[in-house]
Image 1: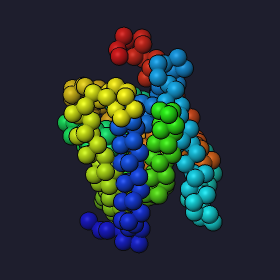
Image 2: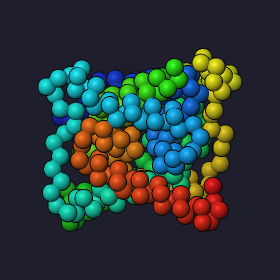
Image 3: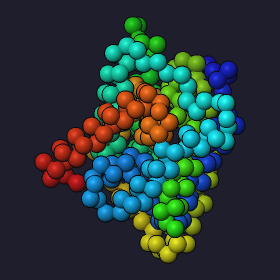
Length: 152
Length: 140
């Protein structure tokens, strides 16, 4: 295994993680809800689902977070440069989105619900989900990058 | 009050995703690429998030109401079944292909990050397709 030292950013990664944990703790101890983003967003796609009010509030907070970062840290972009020029890149992103939408509904959670909240409450079900989606994602990247004829 | 708190939680959550690098697809793929040059940074993000959240989940386990007086609704299912495993496999493939998972997708949507916006279109389609299929088969 080779470590990619030039890209290794342990402190900002840890601090960002701490904020994510804090946000999940706020939602849990105040509203009594799990910060599972795929579930929250899926609720919003069912317009008459009960308790969508807090989901909309949480969603708005997420949407405005890049604006907050730009205000706190002016002069630095919130996102990397991204040129999607080839039609293949659009298609790849669309297909990936469909798989993530379908898969997270089927498994009832994603990186936030199973990954952060599920592991924080020591749920065996979430541990299985995390091991499976991490394994599947790592295998996908390995095939994508290191197979002869891979894209990057 | 509770709506304000939910909004604040979303704001802090998004800030955490941005600061950690989770909202950068190349960084995420670098973390998932254990067979190449591996960037382990995001393992620190997972550890930080779980470490901070864990004591609060223990607190919640011993209570039935939150400090706002609302009922605590923790998931009750402990079932490990084909649906959980197969769904997670599909999610992992999509995450690996794009380097984007649901949280960063929505943060990117808010920030005008084009790859995330394209991803969200597919994300909505996948959710609606699952809902339609489970309605027609009577599955929850």
